[in-house]
Length: 364
Image (tube, rainbow, N blue to C red):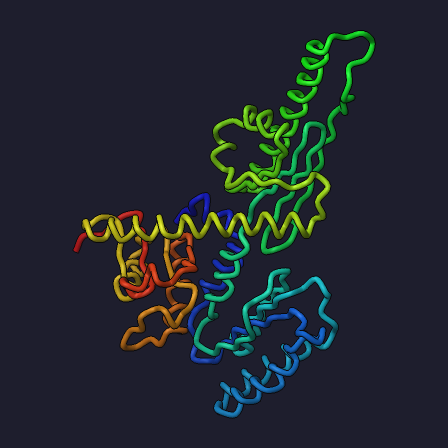
């Protein structure tokens, strides 16, 4: 099944797809999520968590299951024997020694909300998929009339960076030029610069499969830039901010990520409303855990809309909230569907915390 553009551009999409295809087993599969941000004393706390939680789970297992779990626990401990780089703020590890030594580890620049260990028949993907929603892939363009800086951010870190330098123009006319002629001279330089900036932006957006752009421009540069943006790029602009061209990278990331999240919160409400309206009219949407699971099983889902907290999802008779959340997200990955996590869980409360937009419906 082909992926949509949005699905393809999702950070860690290939890795999530691979994990979702893991064949269920009766041996324990460990899904470990660690928040590696230092505490108030400047120390990471993951080692304390591992020393406590791994023996707890081992004690309730027996036979081959215990042997497999203990091998995985030892391998995880060994993985963290060497110092984790300071730039790593989150780690996700998936392991099952009994499944041909299965072991996948991700060190990420974005943190998880807390330490969690899930043990089940398949990898538990909900926290990892949520992280990709919290830290999307996007471009940030800072521009003035003679320079530009372009960043591509994914999962809370810079993936690419380009700079464009134009010709600086003086502030006063020289050589006897009239003010009007000098103004036209400056505008020609500005126009040429903006065309170059737009060409670089277009190339990077295409190469990196970017669907969203945040722009920062001063009052002079903004109209020049917006006039040069073709429709396919203008449609990707999420917001236009005020940031100095020489803003530090960490400031650029913080300010643009906040703009992305504000935009996401606004569109969440619109998307949930559209889903509920389509469902109420018998259109291409379903709501509630059971109907959504059934649509995922049939491969009908285009976009899964799910609460950011599993305890806000109405449980089914056979699935408790964490397990249900994991199955919904894994099903979406198998559908090549986009997963949208709804931060304001109240707007999904009336439909059980989850629903989906469909690409088609199989009639009974």
